[in-house]
Length: 208
Image (cartoon, rainbow, N blue to C red; front, side, top):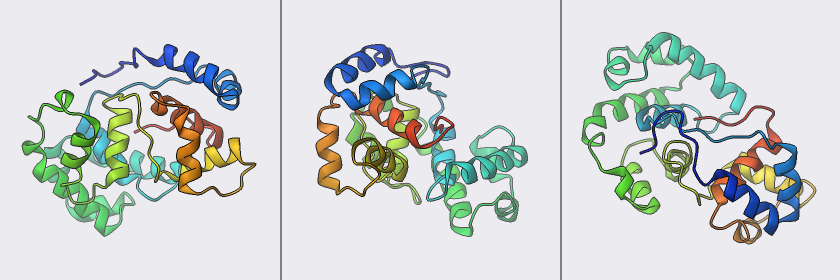
C-alpha cells in the first residue's frame, strides 16, 4: 500500500497521454496543472472519511469531518469506539452513519491484516462492501485516494458526472452509456481524468 505523502509514479505520464488523446482534457489539465493526487497511506482513515462524506456536499463533509476529528483525535478504531454514539451525532453524523462508523471500527481488526496490495481492484471492492455502510462508491474512493490505483471510474460519483457534463456537454445531463463512452479514451488513466473532472466543478481539490 502507498505510504502517506506518496504521489502516483504514473501521474506525469498519465497527464501527457490524456492530453494527447483528449483535446478537452488537454485544456483542463493545462488550466489545473498543479493538481496532485497524494495518498494518506491509511486505509481506515480514508474509509471513515468516505463514509462520513457520503451523499453530502464537499463543503458539508469538510465541516462534519473537522468536528469529528476534534472530538475523536487520531482516526483509529479504539478512539472511535471509546466515543458515545451521541458524541458522533453531535459532530453532524446521522444516526445511520454513526452506526456505520462504529461497525467498521469494531470489524477493522479482521481487515487490517489483509494483503490489499496483492488484490486487484474488483477484489478490493468486494472485500470492502462486506462492511455495513460501505458501497461501491466508497470502495472506489479507497482505490483512488489510498491505493492510488490508476484506472478507477466511479460512475456513481455526482461530482465527477457534473464535471464531465460541464466539460463535454455544456452542462446538460448525460446517460451512463455516454459517460462510459467519454471514459473509454481515458483508459488506462481514468483515475487521473476523474481527479481533473472533480477540479472543474469544485474550487477545492477533493480529498479523502
